[in-house]
Length: 132
Length: 149
Image (tube, rainbow over all chains, first blue to last red):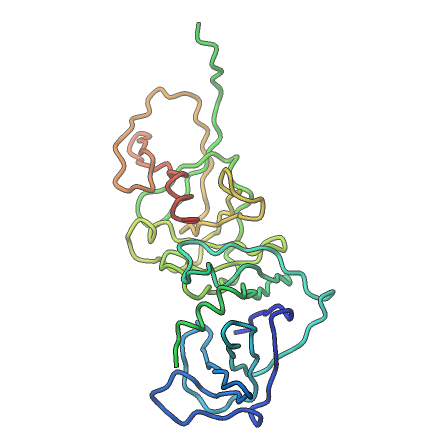
């Protein structure tokens, strides 16, 4: 499953080699990015954004958040020029899953292909609920 | 003197699992074959997914699931009825209802012969009986409250 993330909220994209893989099977965190002030967790999720434990991943994108950034493990990350992407507003139906609203707020429709776009505050609020 | 104008109302009968729905044709933007339904994580069970329609992302629901029945997956004759946004919502907020087959047009010329019955779901404003056929009129206020709490 592909998702769009606004580049404005992407703080860093790291290769697996730059991260500390978490060997604790009981932890929800797949890997850590070590920084001077501590460590940033990165989570591996499936297409339904449920936690997933797997080992064959290559990258993580870290989203700007407070008090520390939160990472999303990805198979692949493509940087798309803004001019090539047309994100239309999209309101998911039903109650939002987080206190910061829905996790999606837009979608890019290309013919029959549709890609949902994250709403960063909702995504961050969800990732924060995953704990460590 | 009652000056209220009465004219024929063009409607569509929407076949779904359970009681068919009756809606004015004017609130329907288009009836389309079922496109690929993209799942939306964290959605309620009655949200089947989202489809691309005229460069927009349109969520599609199962009305029967909304009323508490099970989700009926799209069948060979299923359609998606694209509804205009509900009153007070933004112009991008179209939504779709999955049907079990092609909707049927029906013109109502007068209220004569129409029998109302109490609804069994809060998402149905009232039920009407045409001869032996019972149809439900969706309660758009209830839909709006559930769609956009």
